[in-house]
Length: 422
Image 1: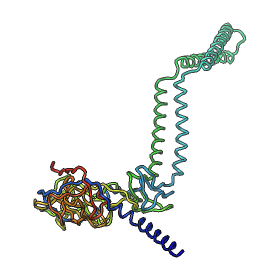
Image 2: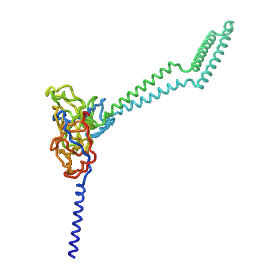
Image 3: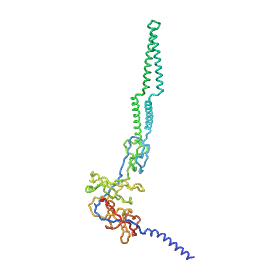
Image 4: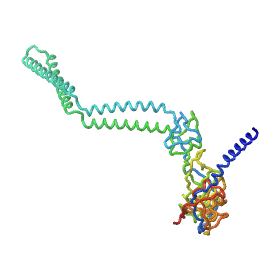
């Protein structure tokens, strides 16, 4: 019974050791890799400088009009998109004015529609009937005045008053007939072109008033001009802001500018588009490169140095953009004297915190040895390396992420890399 228990314990220990050892044995197996050669080339040497990371765009957004803050829609640190509202001002009075202006627009539109429609058949019938009535009244007045006039001239019993009354009625009915005749002629012809032009002008004027009010309403909503981040807010809900007063600061970080102050003897050696390696400790496990984006041709009056902007494409990390405005960066500027240097493919570099290493393959043992290197200037797909390495050695450029120091490797096809001069 004791021997059976001892045997069971031995088997259990064996399987535990096998289970623990299996991953290590698997990790130390032969690794398929792609290698490339370390070259000795002549390039301009590097000058190590310190720069500051700046947002590629910074906007201090101000209020377009005076007003009281109705709602503050963002907080510092918020991610925002172009056109996104950041803050609104109170607009009750403008809304009332806009409602009245739109009602007036409806009235002006109805007036123009009425003129364009012309005279209706019902209106023509009514004016024609009025004309006929006036004509009948005129004929009766003419007959009646003729009768009174004969009696008056013949000495019959007709007073002066009756004669003058009949004359006045005749003249009145003549004018009413002429008025009805003219009115009917106007109805037949329809609205004058000048009246339609005037109505159209009144309508367009009202539309302009509405557009002006709508533009004023838009100015009461402050929006972001581009994608970015809110860094500063200068106002709160209920606060009064004046026209032009800065209320929110927004920065763009999908690409950043590292600004380096370069001395006179070095700035003339830089060319727009030069590739620059940038080292920002404890920020990323990837090599960071940028290009000389701008060389400001105005020296600082105190230091007599020229600001040089290096544009870098930013990355998103777990805490937002990896490169943040205000970070310090070490920059390797290609402004030194030309010299021979060892150049290795950028893909050969393995980052581990602030440690930079490469795996060198021994041609006889086919083992990969991990060595620590220092980095210098970059050129195309190559980067300067220094350390326990020499020209002609084979370094791993594919498959080096899981390699262990001393691990056996199997080489696929060697690859060549290009420089920026090719």
